[in-house]
Image (cartoon, rainbow, N blue to C red; front, side, top):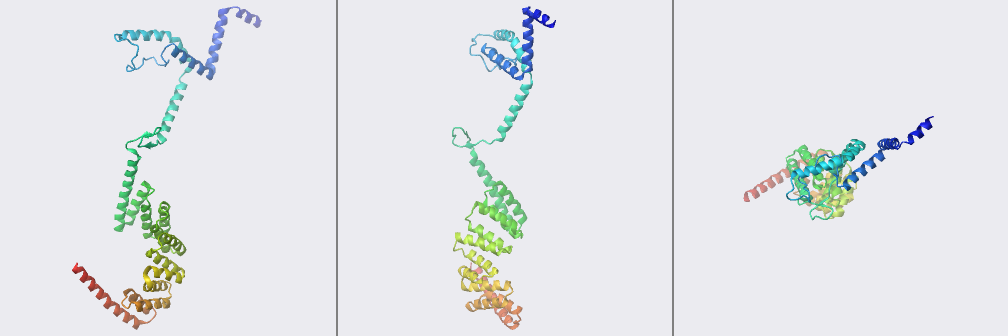
Amino acid sequence: MLSNKFFRFLRHPAKLALAIFVLSFVTVAAVPDLRHGFTAQLGSGANLLLFDGDLEDEELPNSDDQSADAAPDSGQPKAKKSSAVKRVVTAPVRFFVRLFKGKGNGEVAKKASEKDLAQMKVIPVNRTQNGVPGEIADTAGTAREASTTEAAAQNLFESAVTLHGKGRIDGAIEKLVAATVLLPSYAEAFNLLAVCYDEKSQYKTAQEEYKKALKLEPNNARFLNNLGYSCYLAGDNKGAIKYYGKGLKITPNDRRMHNNIGLAQGRKGDYDKARQHFVIAVGETGADLNLGYVYSQQGKFDEAIKHYESALRAQPNSLPALSNLAQLYERTGRLRDAAVLNEQYKKLAVAAQQKDQTVDQDR
């Protein structure tokens, strides 16, 4: 029964056309890919017929975009008339575009544009001062920015030096940390920061900062000497000898570093090597004075006395030898010998003071 009604329906062309149209309409509206393709075809068709490219926009283009074909004496009413004709002709097309396109895609496009814009703001742009193709030329350039950063870090460093000289260690550390954050390649700032931590007896932290400085300047003997001295202060004789040794490979005639490695060798118990470095640093008499100090620090007073006596024989007026030897005599019960040396020390100290005063008056 239904099949008979269906075949009778197909015999009426108008009803058949209407059914096909409705079915097509529903199919296009229901399938997103078909809907998008349909609206794209309508848009391209409108552009082909010289209609407005943006079928959703009811306004005419901005008044700044004047038509090149407009006659000089053409008035505004003619433009309005032409626009009205176009809007009437394209009304069905605009209707279908709005109907099938909807607002969802516009929102998606808007969000995508905002996302792209955000990415563009994050991605840095390489700049150059010579305008190489493909790059953005900048007359200000990154060189000025870099010099400004360096100047700011330098000011912080100089302030830290002043504060350190006044004994305000915490203030100096604050300035130096800021300088290294601002300019991570500032090796001198890391070095001075480490010195400040050493003075606060924070040796582990100090050594970390020295290593940062050395990472920037691996062949800086001064940094190596400072790191070695930090290890020495922390009681790490092995570490001290290691870094002093590296420093001496760079500056083999550095007397200060020879003296320092001699102290570390002596405290480690390698007295022969210590003496070799002491001789290079301060000569034979100085080597005896240094070894006397090393032995006395280790409680080996007899050995210390021998080296101080040797130094005093070589230089009878040596104030350090007299002072230290007198103290050791007292410590070991040789009070009469200590008194003699103390009296001699006082006379020489007064004479040296008077000599210094005379020199100052002559200037």
